[in-house]
Structure formats: structure tokens, C-alpha cells
Length: 177
Image (cartoon, rainbow, N blue to C red; front, top):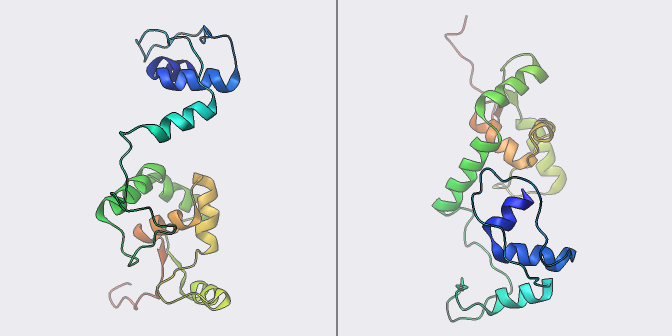
């Protein structure tokens, strides 16, 4: 990975050498089959030079135009921008694939029956004094999150989307035998 990174990005290679201080002509002596790019140029960049160069680059766009950056940036509503929502959804599908989540749920609970989280969420909300639009993360989601190395909140959103956690008690099914 480092060998390919050094070959792909000369600036990164210089920063790597500047931080770790190997000889200027240092290169990893391993094949890089996915990276047919020539060896990195020699030279070093210290971390301080790297930061100064980054900050000095005129190509760095400002999020705030000509206005000074505010000390705190807050959303005016809890609704996410479409691109941010799309990125979150993609990450959820990528890191927590449906079949893998179902398999982990079956292994843990012996089936695909949903967990009704209404009471636990109400207790946690009361305990922490959460607003009505804030949703605490239930223990089941935290437990499942550890298996996928994701946050409890991300796992809870995915489990709710898959119907494995319900935030309300479902109405009785009149047609179920």
C-alpha cells in the first residue's frame, strides 16, 4: 500500500520521507502490480512544510467565499443536504450489506423477527433528556455495530431501514394465522 502510494503521489512520497526520515532515494522494494507508475522522485518535505504548502495553495476553495469563516457552523434544520444523505446511504449499504446484516441478526437472535425498541428508546430519551426529534441508540444496535466496525447510530439507521428494529409497536395483523 505504501509503495503504491509513493508511486502514485510524489507529494505524499516526499511527506512520507520527511516524516520518517529515510534516505532521500528510499523506495519500498516490493512489486506494485496495480501501479505501473515510475518510482517516486527523491526529496523530503517536513510536516511543517507540507502544512504551510497546503495552506498557501491558491487552488484551495473557501466554503464561505470572501466572507471570514464562522467559528461555528450549524445547520438551520436537522434535514441533510441530498448529497450528504446519499453519501450516508451508500456508506450504509457498503459497510453493512443486507445479507450480512441478516446473517448476523439470525445468528444473534435465531431468526429475522424485529426488535421493538419503543420502550427502550423512551427510557433512554427520558434518562438523557433528549428532544422529541432526537433518537437514542439502543443496545441491540450497539452490539451489532461492533460486529461491523461501524457506529451504533449508523447500525441503528440500517437496522430500522431493513425492518429489524421498529420504533413503534406494530398494529395487530388480522390476517396472520
